[in-house]
Image 1 (cartoon, rainbow, N blue to C red):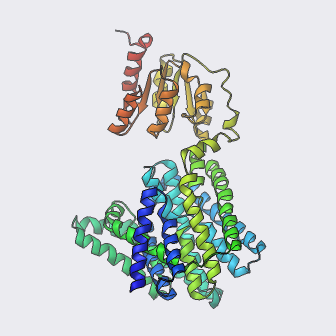
Image 2: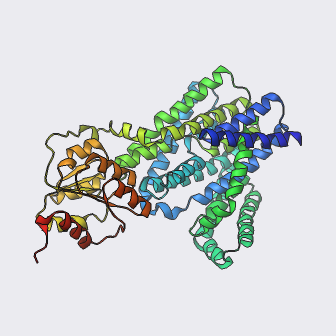
Image 3: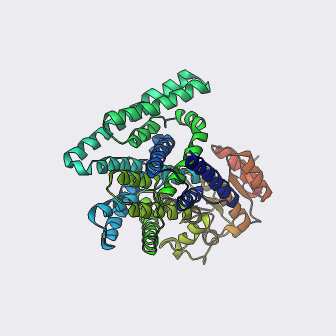
Length: 521
């Protein structure tokens, strides 16, 4: 019991240190568990594996709750292509690289699969902290995570029957597919109605959520599948709206508890790494960082995402997953891998997760955006003047453009979507492909010489950059919150709160700012 008590105390201390330093918590938890192990104050390995497997099962359940497929319905094509290409390419490259390092086929297979998927736990928390869950790239990334998590569940099921032959592996994958079908039915038809019927009482809702978790776990056991497969599909069954919102509120504190205890227990299973293991972990982490961002960027932009959102998606997906640890624990329990290989996978995961908050930032995105082969050719020479500059065209931009053109105004549109630029070019409307908050793009578009600027941008931070770049130009900014409207006013802009503002409202504002185009009395 002393070992378990010390494990909980170490987890609490790691959490406090992480909060104090404002750094990702998972590496601190792994480190705390490792230090306990070195000091010889942990439960037996079997007990640690049991805690790790139970905790990961619950965390996988919590991750599944976040992956509502309705969120990325409009991004189906980029989601499918990014998820498939990243999973296959990174996995194959990882397999080849580890074979070249001298690992046998089975070990290389575990390592390749461990590198192939990204962390739902880390990515979703990052998106929530930055309030980007519902931006296009946020929706795309969560869709990619869902498909990759399903692929990892199938891989874990198949690897758990590796010694039983191909027929057993196929039966296992078929059982997982059946469990997924039950979850899909629950997601679409059962759980939303059940949650509405139960009302707002916490006790019956919590019992229902736990009942779904244990029910799917029982089905997984009956189908001779790993319990983690049942947990993930239970979470997916509860991922529909409004079910997921209720579920997240009920299991939030439990998720934090299991996160702390689980990764501390996994850290205690890590052996003291030698120089070769550390070097190999750095090489594998480097593979993830060097391959994932450009690969995701190219595929995402090819399938319709803008340059900036494609780069952001690639940076945010550049880490290994909690499923890497599930796979490693499963392989360790079955004797497929030894403690050294488990340590290598855990160390690689710790490195990539630790660096994600420092890599997936606006600063890194902008730096990479400047090297884009299309956008880097922007030359500020020959910028227009005396025009209305429209930043961010989007799907409803034409209602803004037509009244301006009808009044004989000179218009320049800036958008980063190649499809929109093609549409505007065919309509003979002056346009420029690029990000409307990039100073080079603003210079090329003549922002400081513009008569008016209409900024329809998703993030108020981007609009603030525009206001700072062209402080003397009247600028209307589309905003969604009162707090954002206040920030725009402080920077000298004019907020338009309703994103569905009518063209007449915009034209009235234009006429007020520009008497030359006032309506005749």
